Image 1 (cartoon, helix red, strand yellow):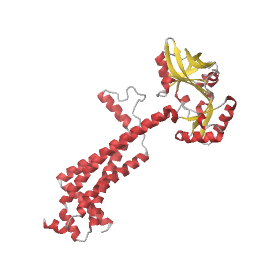
Image 2: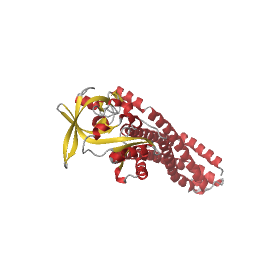
Image 3: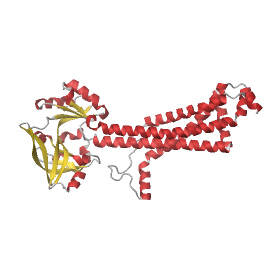
Image 4: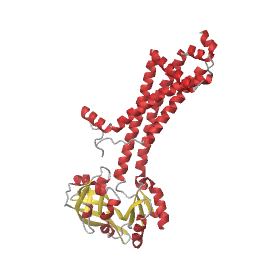
Length: 404
C-alpha cells in the first residue's frame, strides 16, 4: 500500500473520530492537554532561560572571569601577554580583599575590589550601570564606589566619607587597617553585588601591606569557556595552575542550581505532556474498536498487517503534530509576552509576583534548541504511544471481525 493511500485512510479515520461523540470528546480533550502541556513547557523553560541570562549578565558582568595570581615584578608582563591572548577581551591589574564598611555606628561586611578605572570598560559592565558619578573619579589616594542599595541602607549620599576596615598582616598576626574615602559614585546592577561589593583604585588597595598579592583580571569573549581558558592561559603564560581561578569556583554552584531547576521543571512539565499522550492513546484504542469492521474490510482487500499498523501510527502522528504545533505557537506567544501578561494580572489581582527580588518583571528568552527538543520529544512520545492501538488494529482477524 502506497504512502499516499496510507495518509488518505488515516485522514479519513480522523473524520471518523469527529463523527463519534465519545471518541471526539476524548480526542479533543487529549489534544487540548497536549497543547497546554507543550505551551507550559515552552513558557516555563523560556522564563528559566531568562533568569539564567539575567543572573549571568548582572553577576558575571562585573566579577573577574579569570584571575592569575602573580608576583609584583611579573605583573605587567602578564597583563600585556594576557590581553593579547586569543579569546580575551581585556586584562588589567586587580586587587581583592574582604573588609568592613563602616559609617557612624553601622558596620557591614563587604568585598573590596581594587580596579584600574581607565580599563574597566573593557573588563566589565560596571561603567554602564553607574547611576551617579564616574569610575574615573576613583583616585589612587581617595574615592570609593558602592551600590546604590547599599548607600540607601547606610543613609549615604555622594560626597559623604566612609571608612573601610581591611585586614593587614603584621609580624605574623592580622591587624585592622582603616582607610577613609569619599563616596564618589553609585552603581546598580539589580543583583547581589549591589549590597556587598565596594570598588576602590587598585593602587590604593595594593598599598595595604600584607594584603593578598595582586592579580591579573581577565575578561573573556565567551564567559562559558572560563575553565578551559584559564588552563590555556596558565600553560601559555607559564603560571602555576593553582595560581589560576575562574568564576565557576565562586559562582558555579548558583548557576548549576539554576540549571538543575530548569531540568527538573522540564521533567515535571514533560509528565503533563506524557499524560496528554496517554489520553490520545486511549482515544485511538477506542477508535480501533469502533473501526474493527472497516479494518477487516481493508485486510480482505489486500492490506497487510503492517499497512494497518502504519495507518494508525500515522493517525497518532497527525494528532500529535497538530497538538505540538499549536502548543509551540501558544508557548512562543506566551513566552514573548510573559512580562506584559504578568503585569496585567498583577494589576488586576493587586499582587506582586517578584516582590522582594531583583527583578521588575519576569525575564524570558526563547532558545531554538529548547523548541526543537520539545517538539521532537512530544512527537516521539505521541508516535510511540500510538504503537499499542496500531498493533491491536493490525492483529484484527478479518473473519472474526466481519462475523460479528
